[in-house]
Image (tube, rainbow, N blue to C red; front, side, top):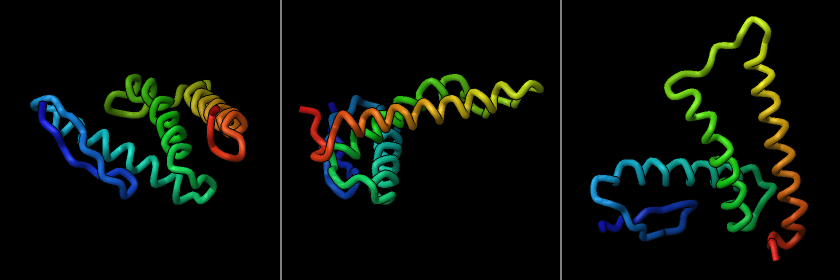
Length: 111
């Protein structure tokens, strides 16, 4: 197994990578780094582990949307259901993030 040295939010990691998987791993690293930096730059969360959890939740939440929209965004239907789905997803995400914040508490630790 090949190893790649990457940086996520300024920290270096040495990751194992299957042969031929370089580009997929680097794309994943880029998505994680972008998600974590966006949360950090918003200024509301400071702890690296908490930023990682929030970024993981955001990325995991997007997975079904990516699978459904493979190459293009769905066109809104005449009755507006696509727009409603997007709004419902945003409300659910905000709710999940608020619950996570409550569970983590002030110190940013689950236990």
